[in-house]
Image (tube, rainbow, N blue to C red):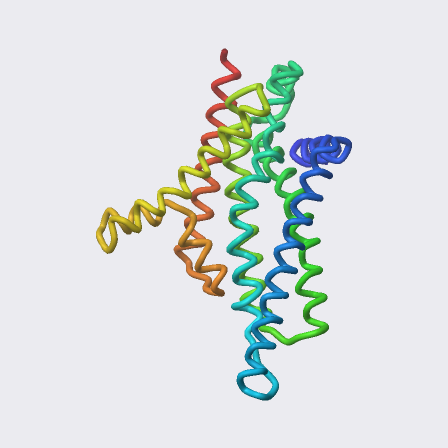
Length: 256
């Protein structure tokens, strides 16, 4: 077992012996299920209305009425929930005074940061995988195009990875887990609100640059079933930047 794998296993054990992952997971799945139910009921009401107007069988687009709205709504849920998952990663190490032991262990800072991030990302992917029951069950009762659904899940995975990377960075800044969660939430909310400034500037160079910095338009394109190279580059470079900043913060703490 490599040092990174050992660290990932340690972090996963820490998550699953703690009630946090169960509470967060239950809330996440409950909200996802509730929103799915609301959008499915709305789609059913639309179908009934169309049947009454047309006097026959109504054809509705579940991708537009259910999944697109569902994925768009989940970005705000991720904004609130994911900082809670990451707040303990480095902050708890500092509080328990095991951070110094971690820094003096025979494992590099790259491996430490990678292990911390991968462990929480695996937890998130497991929760995301459980939500796949919704389209799987819905497939038994109605037809829809799976491609936009899979693209939407790709968008949620990439957005979640970015949010988690920001959370890991915030956790490295402090030993207080609550402060780490609020710092992570504040950074993500600021990046979200930047998209509004880009919209105000309109079709200008500054407007395009500011809009590109925000994750909103990149995620929205994936939710609409569009895979653009620029969006993948955005998520990849943003993820790399946040992990690099985390590396610098952890490295600076070694010499204090």
